[in-house]
Image 1: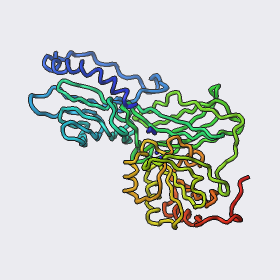
Image 2 (image 1 turned 90 degrees about the horizontal axis):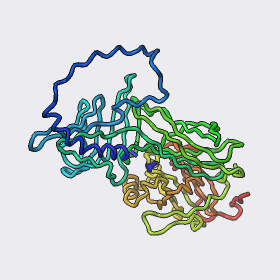
Image 3 (image 1 turned 180 degrees about the horizontal axis):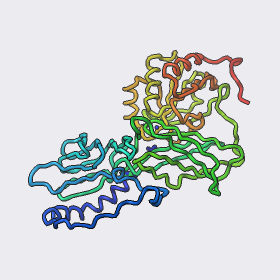
Image 4 (image 1 turned 30 degrees about the vertical axis):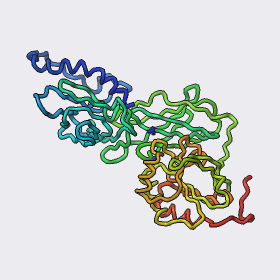
Length: 430
């Protein structure tokens, strides 16, 4: 599911400082290129069994950068080649010449007219030594940053990192003995990696490892994938584990090298409660959230007297399926249909209007940028649908996010009790 979050920026910023040097040397080098010198034959490589082994080998060059070469060009209009041998790639560029355009390579080479561009998206396919084909897709969220600016002029040569190395942005939110982690994979151009696949299938799941202050492993679990590679995962501290902890994410994605970094620290209080506050028969946790499409906010308790259906969405295809199903099967009059949007990057009025246009969803949409409600309802893995009766008591929650949308909606609808709930039907919390 939907981080921003969704770092690709840092590499291009460094590369940009080399442009002037390359520009001055590019044309001169091609005019006065000295004859190639013969070099002595290289000694045969040592057998694989005798080669020194490294704990963290560097990724292949093709996984780190494409090379934009705009020189030398003849006078007048021409095409600048983008070369990335051994790969196939597609770039999405916003330019000063022809606006938005797609540039697709053939044999690892693509050509564009020299000018100023903003790199807004990319897709790269790289083979590994075992013959498997790895594909990564990504792009810059929102307005392209300065580091995604590509100025292509005659005489220039510059590297452009695509598909790696990828960093990990990991954000924990703690409530009681549970920490909900939001994870996104980011590159050096301010981009986000939306997807990685190997031979058309998802790669191995990342591993989330939890360390204590002594550096000892206290837990290890596989991290689930979510929408657009933004993953959310609720982790519950094992019995006896508390204090300051550190979470680190690791993954082996072949040529798309992942740099996990030191991870993030968080704390589980020694006296934190293990009690699960959200279950059928208990009051739904209170919240006050902003409604991006309106100038105001909504508090859950203000809806007392009405049944409420809460949908936790991130905007992924599964969420869209549930939203579209609500359009096909509207609820009875007097029932409040609400979507709580837990991806801060796409909780904008413009993005939500597009979501409504695609799905026909007519309920109110609230933004949960700090994941307060998402964590309170244990709904990091969406779509999650909760039904509260008119007294605010939880009556239903879907068992699995992977259920068909039709089943999720029909079961939630069946749990709705229209109108005020009689006092005898109200369940008191302990």
